[in-house]
Amino acid sequence: MQVLGRAASVGAFDKRGEESGHVKISLSGNTPEHIIRITRKIDTKNKSEWLLDVFTTRPIQLLEETQKAVGVPDLPVQHHQLIYRSKELKNLEVANLMRKRLPWLKYEMKEEELIEAQEQEKTMKKKMEIAKIWEDSKRPIDYRNEQVRAIMNKLP
Amino acid sequence: MATSAARARIDSPPPPPPPTQPRRGDDDYVPCNIVEIELLNFMTYDRLACHPGPRLNLVAGPNGSGKGSLVCAIALALTADPSI
Image (tube, rainbow over all chains, first blue to last red; front, side):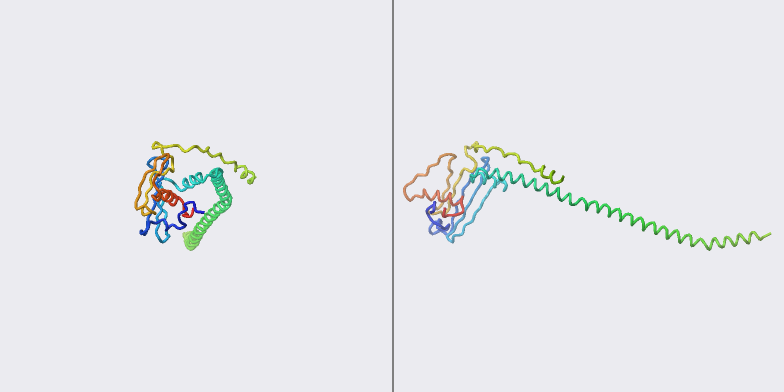
């Protein structure tokens, strides 16, 4: 049973002899300046196109208003509860991620300490090598100094 | 300990605000009233533009003048299926 009782296809609503037509309905919003325009284009090939021009209504608000318009009393209440539960669930997920990440943060701190200690070890090793070279280079001079000191002692 | 703390954190959501009757604006329209209808090549209409008032509107005319077509136009623009 067709409530409109005229036709079952969009194209039949087109004016005879014309290729296409349209219906444009303007609805009032929350203020006189706020107008919602709905345009439905039709043509004889049963092709239909929707155009919805909502200036300031956000998709979330549009969904909520649609739920109210549907007329099921519990629907907005359940939607509100679902939004609240979703936020709670997101908070729990973030807390869980933080708890999981904490050991990794500690590991990363220890790794940085290890790298720093390795750098210090490398620096100290270089200093030791330099010191050893210096000590080795001093030996011939010490030997010569001993010889000179011995000769000086023998002089009258 | 963590599970009990997590469970305690999920309390019941605050109740939503009570639904109020839609309020008429300064122009006497309620949100989502039809403020303008424009037809182009729709059934018997070549072109039509009219501005329904905010309260009771009457469409009068003899047989075959397009009274029902106007209702069809409104329904077709606001619903998806022409076989409604």
